[in-house]
Length: 273
Ligand SMILES: C[S@@+](CC[C@H](N)C(=O)[O-])C[C@H]1O[C@@H](n2cnc3c(N)ncnc32)[C@H](O)[C@@H]1O
Image (cartoon, rainbow, N blue to C red; front, side):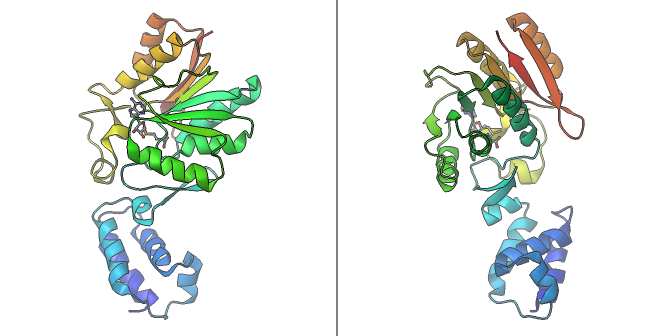
């Protein structure tokens, strides 16, 4: 089978599972050949070795497995992070959360923060790379994210700046903190998700409770109780109203909600004092 024929075959296989089957066919073939996509165009008539392996990759994607799990890598912000099943694939909207946190770190010269729910390490790794004086304690309740985050932290040489800790929220983080950042699970348990998400990504990373915002509310209460000045969280597009009502009851100095690039409410910044 030539490269050209392999692309035609793979595109047909991916027709149903992918929005851009031709593009994903190219990505998978390029990954299989350990080449970039340009190589496929310039070597159309070259024959593809080890076709059975390519077929396995394409069949996994055709069964809705996310591309990032198949190749073991996700691109996020300005880096590539290792990912595997059991850890959430970092999403582009979380880059906005990082920008909101960065503004506060810069303005207030913060050096001690925590992240709740580290996952692949996406947020902590990007923040630590941006701010060499920043120390981060990053928690998770699950083993796989802690293992994958450790790998990514080591890859980028950030072990001095980011300490990982198995903890529910910040229960086991007694250190003094200036800010907490989190992209917690915030989806309602009965929300219908696409197969590539619900069948492959970890439930602990997705579902925040029967309503969805339960963990977010717990985080707000915890951070307030601990006397930490700032909390910055990602949230669901429909959670602004209930969270605004909740903080009105709890009492905070200020809250503002930010939107994602599609114009949906996507997160908030709370200042407690
Ligand atoms: C939506 S994922 C976010 C992962 C990563 N921070 C990102 O933005 O890509 C949420 C993470 O929170 C973790 N988690 C869920 N409940 C938690 C809890 N009670 N305490 C700490 N971490 C929790 C999950 O295991 C998961 O890794």
